[in-house]
Amino acid sequence: NAGVTQTPKFQVLKTGQSMTLQCAQDMNHEYMSWYRQDPGMGLRLIHYSVGAGITDQGEVPNGYNVSRSTTEDFPLRLLSAAPSQTSVYFCASSLRRTGNYEQYFGPGTRLTVT
Amino acid sequence: ILNVEQSPQSLHVQEGDSTNFTCSFPSSNFYALHWYRWETAKSPEALFVMTLNGDEKKKGRISATLNTKEGYSYLYIKGSQPEDSATYLCAIQKVTFGIGTKLQVIP
Image (tube, rainbow over all chains, first blue to last red):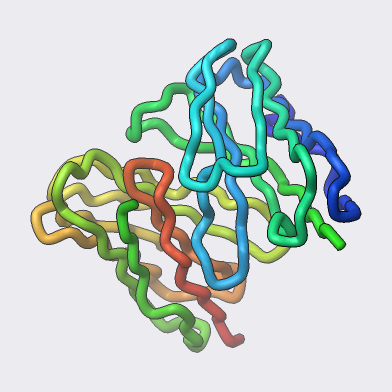
């Protein structure tokens, strides 16, 4: 059981470039989500999904797209990278969306946009 | 956007001391609070999920209580050890996180 995996661990982009952060889980979890971590701020929700084919916006969705074609995978796409998107990105999963289920985090992707 | 506050922001204690910190949140429409332990260069790891007013949870030397009517939760660590050094996060409604309390246990 690998849990939640993320690739890459580190990435440097130039302004305007696009890229996809990968996230996968092997626990058959229904709920998956993406957060960003910035200094002095709590984790902020970008997008989430309650199942294959269903996604919704979180607190800070602008500049990011997601899709959920399978239960296992939940990639995050940066459409045109900006320096403000320099951050550490965490993917997380939970058996169900409801609040009483534990959330499991991936190891994170550190992204720098120059 | 819900506001989750954690205090103190950082804390240094001696090995063997007991300590506690606070997570405060709006009491209206509450349904769940999560505590996480986050070691440097790792990812947050779930400690407790709490849903009921008066809930108490315990895992080894770490315990937590929940007061949903007044909007706070306490996390307690008994007999702190250097390996307890980490940032402790709380989140309400699963997705709204506080900034965390950074604990450093001095040997």
